Length: 251
Image (cartoon, rainbow, N blue to C red; front, side, top):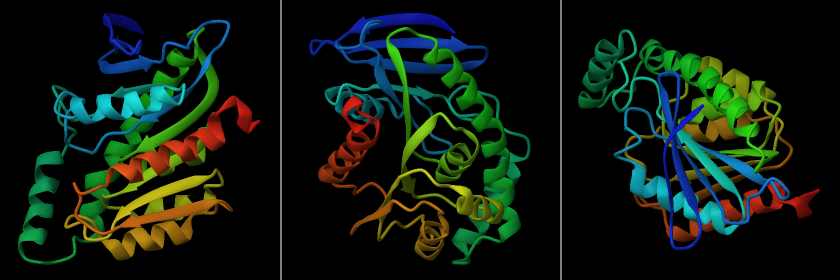
């Protein structure tokens, strides 16, 4: 991991941009973070196809809320997003998806698989590599949560990555059949956010995914409104979820 820039805001939050091979990312740490008092870490997921730079205002706001709880936060550019090379076949599958949506049809399972699974297969190892590097920093502790999307990436990480202790997932993207099956293996505490009128989300699939999760502690947090209409208090409730499961007081 090579840090390429660093700045500190008035509230004491440090923001460091980094490069890890061809992966770029941003790490935010609260002023309380130190080698003698390492802080928990939140992996902040991004929507697919939207670059980290375009998402920066929302990411910085989420990181600020996370830092207020005494946690660090990190995000990375997803494969095929920002300035990264497109994933093979991405242009064709997005055209196939657009045709189905324009015709008012549910996208075929094959289209969803080709759209999401290559992203999951490439992004999850990159998240694990990032986690390896960030956890080597002395100011970062070993309590880790995943927050955001793409929800299929969050599901895969929750299944295979034992360092993730809790996840707050955004139900706003398509879910392949294999990911639905993997969800049955998830056992960590979950907080799932669903916008009830999300124009780009299959509500039935989102509810089926929630039902499939094997976790004994899982909460579905549904609000009226479209994809971009998430109320501020919903984010605050998600922050409290992580405070319960990742703070030092939690165990």
